[in-house]
Image (tube, rainbow over all chains, first blue to last red; front, side):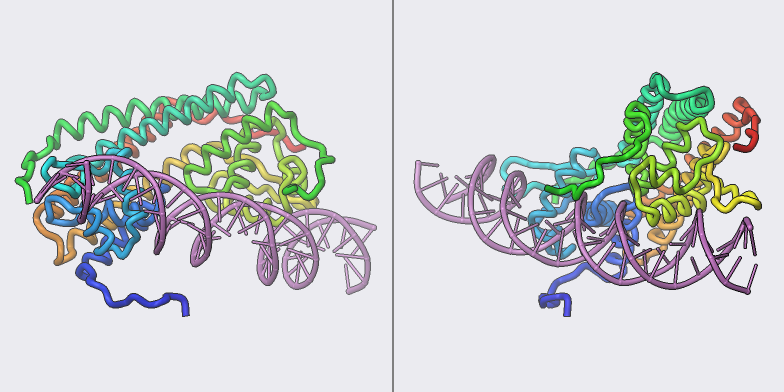
Length: 170
Length: 170
DNA sequence: CAGTAATTTCAGTAATTACTGATATCGTTG
DNA sequence: CAACGATATCAGTAATTACTGAAATTACTG
């Protein structure tokens, strides 16, 4: 009574679909649209070196529109790479070789944003001593985590260098 | 043409309101409703030792309903304390003495959830070697950050013990 | 223990946001 | 440079979510 029709479709293996879905729900909590999460998840989970938009619309049962927009979003966030090889019409997409690093960077930026806001609040004439104390504590906390997280990332990257096997075409 | 009427209201100082608003926008990014963010922000920024729901509905121009629900949310999240002193009808609310610690804990829980999902994905029969490698890397990353964040919190708490001045009533 | 003030619950609504599908644009190929 | 295939854009819609305000519940008071 809700779905119009179209249940006559080539789908990806149900097992995979399930995992894709759980990933996308996770990503949703980080604030991005479910369809974006699905695409990201699929690109993480697939063995195919590259995937086209047409394939994504097909596999994920999405419109060309949302695939295009979500791909672009993931691209600008640095989670997905677009590979437009000349001599080919369709662009190819694959997951960024190390999306975690990109995600880390965004987190660090988030902390900086937080610090900025706290700083502004502290300079507000209207706030009193109690609030000031709370804000100072919060600022100290975020500054601490800011450097700790950066250090932690560096350490982890040193211990876990990217295994490089830039795959061959098609 | 949108606002019905009711612009005849006692408001908190515009300077404060502005900061409250910027905080609430920040909190919105962490996924909770703007009104919840406003309440939390106000409780952080006020000098008053306790605030009642009635005062919040008034100051923040919100309905009794949303104040009640949001207060309850903030309470269960551990960001806000309800102080129901016998001999008083109205409950009093104040910000948790150290909400940052609560926030940290929630973050750590988030990391654990992420690890769980990755674990489940890894046991999926359908995924191949490339995906497995990516998932292992992701898992290693989150495990690393999980412990690093916990350590960082402990260190910070040691360096920044809570200054205790549990304030007097009213 | 009746009366009342405060809080919670809940149904309805307003506003936001993701998504679709049609159209426009861009880029490659013959 | 014409034709076509692929991607981007955009307006409309479906679905979700925050919020309101009234009614129900709970808890304190005389």
